[in-house]
Image 1 (tube, one colour):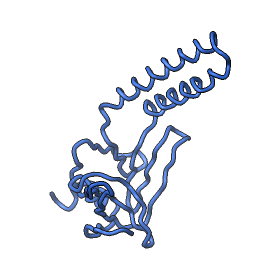
Image 2 (cartoon, helix red, strand yellow; image 1 turned 30 degrees about the vertical axis):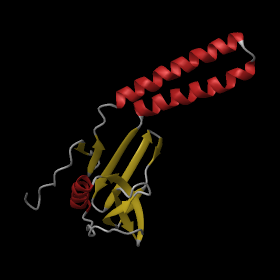
Image 3 (cartoon, helix red, strand yellow; image 1 turned 60 degrees about the horizontal axis):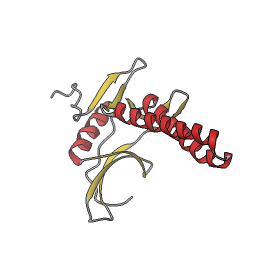
Image 4 (cartoon, one colour; image 1 turned 60 degrees about the vertical axis):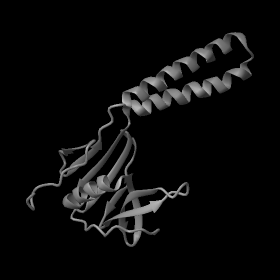
Length: 172
């Protein structure tokens, strides 16, 4: 790979060049439609139960089923239409999560990337997280396996110009 070639992304990730400049990084989610279908089916079933209770039972027994129906319906809508994207450009990473105007998008500038290894409290299983370190304070970006995080860190570093700290086995 030459100095001007972008590092490769791990399997399951893809990048699009943004119209405004930079790169939009996304995770491929092929099974997302099954989650949407499952939540929608459960919302319809809970809605049917709400309707039946409305007709036959006292109104107090309708409230829990109505709440469950609404929550499952909102979950199905969220899974169907929400988007998660990391917008990467020179000296900037923006992590957008949500639907249109209802999105959260923290922005990170003037940072370094750090991969931190920690261990779970159950059975001491190691896991790895990628942080953007700004002014000595870590900002969590993503958790994946070590190999995948190293590839993502290289890709992000290439596009932002941020240095990558050596692997740390510590808490911030």
